[in-house]
Image (cartoon, rainbow, N blue to C red; front, side, top):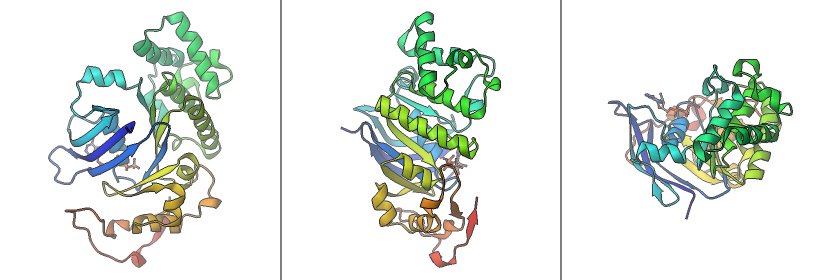
Length: 296
Ligand SMILES: Nc1ncnc2c1ncn2[C@@H]1O[C@H](COP(=O)(O)OP(=O)(O)OP(=O)(O)O)[C@@H](O)[C@H]1O
């Protein structure tokens, strides 16, 4: 049985007729690292938030999200929040907004442990410092006593990774975890994330715009386009034989070998005009040759 199985997931906000995510389906096996790539607005974050049960109140969700043998859609809040942080966790794009500015970061990491394990404060402190060291923060005692604004962006993101992995979740969802960091720090944070996952054996859903980074971090790739998954496969297979024109365009414009981690790949911003092979959805039909390239 898959760790996570998403079937026919459709998410709408308010009275919008156009779903943000439409009939999305994929699964993640234990320990597997899956990349989710797509243009801005294609529905990557909404898919992640639906799995985490953290969508805005205005969202309505249909379909199925199964965690092991349990259905997450419609699960009572108390039960959902027990799973969140303990069995699956998420690292967000912007560490400053994900951390409480009024509390030392060590206490915030300890809080996650306490909530899920009931660890007494003394023991929690030791575990927190161990975890901060494990994500490449050597001066763990000092970092633990610091407030978020006293740390650099890279340090804050490491704190969030420590926080998300401290309960050894079976699945870690990373939503553009290094986008807010500068390029050299991004490479280091990605390296330690990979190492931390090796140690915890957690599976990962890694969301990015960046094909180069995804191809370094993941085994399998999902490509989202206008709210739907249009391509799925082992990274090497997709790169060698993309089946959807959007993926082909993305790969064609991406000189993957020459792009260092964190550096943006060129994207094609006229792909809205490429037909989308989703039942029931009418797309404009302009040929791929009429696209233009831009650099983000
Ligand atoms: N709270 C919300 N209310 C209304 N619409 C929303 C809300 N959150 C997301 N959307 C819409 O859902 C669609 C998908 O957004 P989503 O954030 O998943 O895109 P994304 O692929 O993650 O983009 P990016 O790469 O820029 O983060 C967008 O059209 C967005 O405007």
